[in-house]
Image (cartoon, helix red, strand yellow):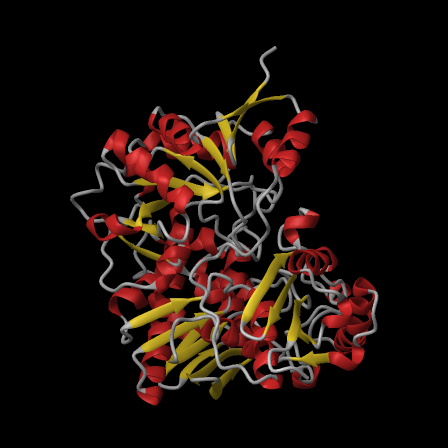
Length: 570
């Protein structure tokens, strides 16, 4: 094989189905299936869907990279069936995860996955198939995409094959395992269980994290210490109390009171539970970070896995943790394992001397053409106007109190909108937050909105004790400087923090220009930014998606590349 092999990375076993194409260290394309099929998380995390591969994402990567299926040297899948362990003695749902029949079905479905990808490619690639351990794929997505030549690495999520966390050390081209933590000791599953306990779904960890800021962790701290024991080498979960694989909450209800029903209001008790959950999580992550620091001696830390999307914990690790520099993979969720698996196999099979540094997240598509925009507009009840300065137009509207959809350039990847598929508002008035929540997003009242700030002004407005490339990815919630909070109340959470995104002129010149125009009008070098979607859909991907979402919400206008999109007046 060649020194720089072409590798197709695939994630499909659980959720966040995705594909990635690399040539050696070079990332040619990345795509998330949810952007195409318009289903959040792409598919349910059911055994029945394990062999439902990201066909549209694979095809998109191949087309954008201009690669023919016969050129693919390897296909890397971010799951290794040989590492799946027999069911343990715990309550399970018959035929589902952890049940003997369900586990056999899982193996059958995994065995069919290479053929399913072959069918998408129109070529039998089964002889080129490589299984990559899930946590290794997470860790590789962080370390091999980081700016570091040496780093401690932590992957931590719900579950891989059987492990739930990986501690590793990256040195040059090598990534060496230090230790793993295994199921049922899962911090990710603890969050999923409490999300359902509080009447939400398993993907609602960010909502709980936001709710946690409204209360003190003191009331239930002792209860959480019994549920999750923090040790010098990691943590241990009381699996009998959680009963992860069944919808049984009786042990938790004994400790915390009745489970919330989805249609019930959030009373203060749930905020107290969330606060103790967040507090416990930070203790666990700091314990693991201290262990990695002691064992590697590295000044650098890389993180991936779903728990790494906890921006409150990441903010504390950045500002207060034992490492000088912290890199959080913006694709920390399972979708990122497509990237990690591809980079891992490319390094195993090639002779790669360079490295990929993920200094921007805009890998998700090519820019839309004028023809695509005009075709989408012609099918909708909108008026399209060509703009001389889209950035100035958008900034003027935002400064005037309007809510503006902003669609430009290549799509960002991962769960957070970072200035290319965003809804923007004025951070100076609390009404902006309420306006977007009620008219556009239809979200819970307690969820904050994030600021996008000019990179050169970030330290004036936010308490960033250390710099990090990952501030560009909205990875950290940090304190807003007290002297600035009254100026930008719409982006300040109840605890005085904000999940900040720094915007670099060299990385995203058009978004930087918009914020600069807003600063020229208002003196404020930041805007309110939330993802361009509604509560029941993924982030928009195409001009047609953007116009459709614009029309079904209360946004005032849409700036789509060089065009202003407005509703037709009756």
